[in-house]
Image (cartoon, rainbow, N blue to C red; front, side, top):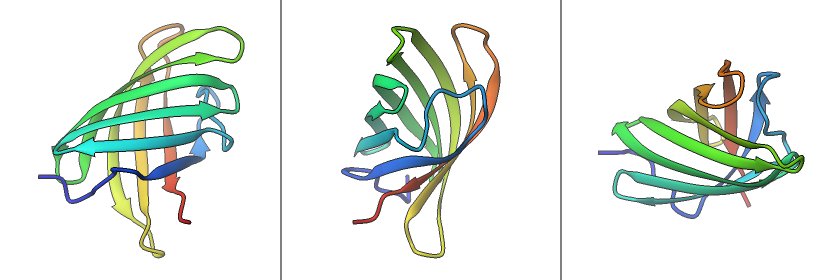
Length: 116
């Protein structure tokens, strides 16, 4: 169903609202099997993080994530993610997300694929 293959692709945040935790030093390493998505991430203020997700439409997925920050804080959230291609032909991810822990605020993020 998905038109995107995230397997083995890396991403970094280009934009994140102020209440988000990731920075442009955070790198995401994605895997995909069918419609199932997983990712590991670290860097910047993130010691270690994980994502589990599922494509619901060819370009849209639901993601659940959790991380441990470098300050020792454990955080968790969910996101509605929309995938697209930019002019360079690399994958972009636009997310509407919300923390499920802590202050439960929401925000937006834009990630872009790291091309080698």
